[in-house]
Length: 140
Figure 1 (cartoon, rainbow, N blue to C red):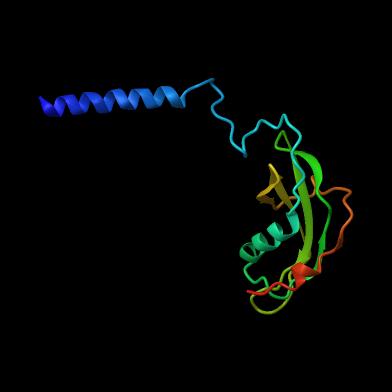
Figure 2: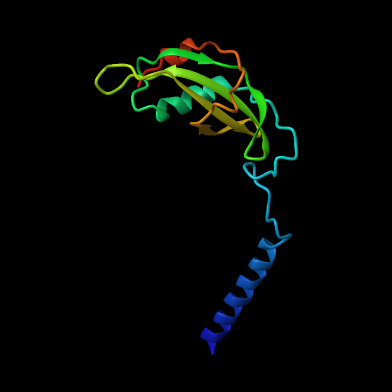
């Protein structure tokens, strides 16, 4: 009988937790799922966050050439209002040669780096790049 009481208590606890996790049908709002209704905060530390990210994103972060960065701009990406920082750079390949210049968008949510956009033609259209020497000075 002791086992069935424990089992019943666990089932009731589980049902209670499911009730707490409920709510409306859309679920809880997280920092990456805010439905895009609100204006996003400006990403104040975008440069150091991008440098830290690029150090892990690039196969070889040493010797990047032609690095440029644009100031954060608000764009609608995936139906949500986000800040996007556009990057332009030419990474070094494993054989020491340089790959063609790439353009990437870095997406920020709630002022924090969220992800990189590899096809950045639309969100980066019309931005003005300035040199980004810190990206060229990266080490391993």
